Length: 169
Image (cartoon, rainbow, N blue to C red; front, side):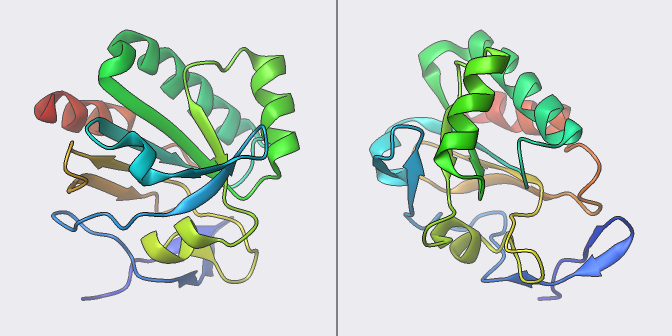
């Protein structure tokens, strides 16, 4: 399989780990929530999941992405677990979510072990940040949609992600 090509500001970056693809069984991972507690993908077993992946809440595109998925999460209620993952520190994620009213996403930091980044193939070698993307998992953690945004400074395709969610509900 050809590796996914991603750029940051037009410059190619190297993605580490194994890029997850359609039909894969999503590996379990552990990340840290905003209260410094470990959270596992398995904590959401039995639910459809949308994982929104982004480099940092301190950029405008990441802010837009989190606001967009936060409002869409409200429409799905508890039928879908909306998980937002970055390598931001948990403190930065907590500050951002509090200041911006982001309350429908489970916000996780992958900074400690970069386990999500490596297991899903989103870790940028040169920056130790996560590339931008979206992964939709069905109730059995099978990948139903995956997007690695080709240019990190652009937004993901929200419509395709939500369409994939609706198909598995």
